[in-house]
Image (tube, rainbow over all chains, first blue to last red; front, side):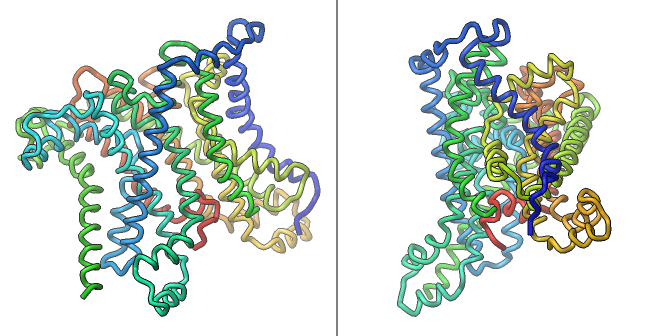
Length: 286
Length: 276
């Protein structure tokens, strides 16, 4: 039996002191700061002006659209590739352990380092990508992967997919391994084709894992910063400036604390909205 | 016959994935072993003609502040990992063994705090650190990383503590132990695997971060590996062999730790939604 005494509070106290100091207070400060220049004038300058500005500022609106594009594309590709590799590894494959380790490897690299390595591969003259494409006679002159405003986002997305899909794969593989064999045998007895098996046995069983991997991945991708920062710093011409990069630049480069806070608050609301189903799913198991 | 065809296709697919996954590692290592002159050859060579350690590894270790970055990252990540795990274990025990007013609400707060974006918090946190004189210090970073990883540590360890039978700590209480003693002497040793997992996880998060280190430090002597390397790339001319040598060294510790930890990570992050 669980006890009802007050000593429970003592055990969780240090945890919540840290949460309050490092997350709680800054969060409230940021919220207030998005309405008033609290660091110079306190709350006397309370205004909705920063939020009003957000919804007419093309820089913010474009960044918002770009964020949705970046997160949507990367998460979708992580899922497709992750599911594909998980299914392949779950079938009777030779040297499964070996493939599994290789499949996880990119995820073990910090995203900053992944960004640096891909930047090195994208280098127009000394990078391996142009060299490879040139040898295959697919390009005639060097392509500026990270300096061309239309190519830069797909290039960053490719680097991100490389580093991000293994986590989804890992979760889905763990999920696949829990599906009872009998269900497949029953489907086979009923004469199901491979595609029917996938649609009516694999997918329904995998649904909770797909849901949780998608939510976690969406949260991480929305907050992605290091990979983009080292590859492009949000450029060229803001072509990769997603909201986290925009908020950072507004705060730490241009010192628009109020405006940056308003952007971050919108970002936080967006994340909490995504996160609610995750919190529900996880805390049901309390 | 169809089954054989499928198997061939599956292996072919995995082979393509293998090449895609390994290519960046190959290029990183290959570049780190080249001389600066060879990097600028046209066309670029796939593998250095005479692999050399001096140009990449030698210079990044001797000519730049890289060893200092490595030291900073180690100190900050290790301290944050230990604090996060210790505090997380206490909280996990509290949530696992006690019912109290607001328990469900506090669990919700704990889980929701994981959703907050860094850019929202890091600005005001930076201002607070400046006021109390902890800006550009190890401690400011350590506190940040300990707390950022705390929800994960507390939640994963609560799961581990749930599997330790209540009767064990109750027996200790009957023998005259206090709650804290029961926790330290009885439960602690039984959740070692979980604690190792949270230590490694927190270490990895701190090691891989860029945003917080970028905002909370300013001098080169306080930079972490990721920050130091990111500054090497934004200099007017990038010296790829040095940069890639640094990247190899910086990627090595997390790689080993992740491989040791993969199963716990899945369990912890999916909140037990994935059973073994």
